[in-house]
Length: 303
Image (cartoon, rainbow, N blue to C red; front, top):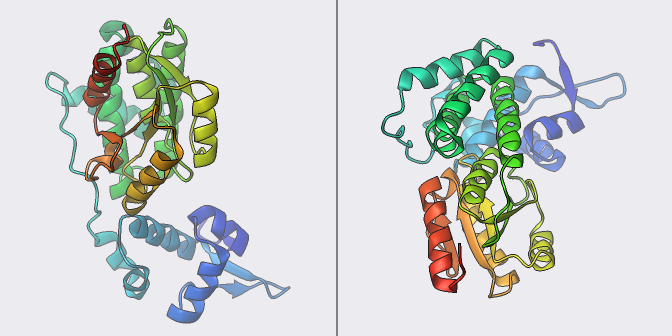
């Protein structure tokens, strides 16, 4: 793996940095330092691609690219991540049990993880399973990925197996009537677990959820909300989403949506945000459930 080289299109795909940005940095800062193949095309060593991925992640957390590119490679790892405050583990949850579940992922024992999670779901029921198992596990995995103790492929394994469990559980639920809540995320927000957790709890609460998956263009969100006669559009923002973009996106979408459709935004990404006018921020699952009750009380709709 360390001897692999990537062309500029592959580096763009791997890092999320555009080809133009890579070329500008090469001229302005002297990094990256690609080689050339027989045709004169840029070829980037794997270690430079890893450094570029780290730089992109730190930029998303608010660091300036000039400072990052001037720093020695080892110094980047020591930069304190600008993350949301840690979410405390719910009262009554055994920390050792959560650690044991994550150890199964670290040992790459997907079958063992699924069995253990299915047992917890059967024992606790879906509401408690989401609140006391999936939510704190997801926070732990995100923090572990950010501090380097979880590999990207391990985070993906956790996500895919947990998505499978939640979707199976949601499929067994009876769909409610109101409010009609359209669930999605904005472009460049691919994290879906937050949406699935909210969908499970809101469906249990009697809401009618309309899941659209992730990374929907704003105009399509508006069209979908109108087509489905949604009462609410609910977006999820993970802690990995660039914080500085959230407020502007919410303000823009609020202007685009009809006034009769509420706009909610939840997830760890909104913990430090101030709510734009006409937007309700829901940093936790409890706030999402409370928002349903508030909507019903305000609208006069029955449960």
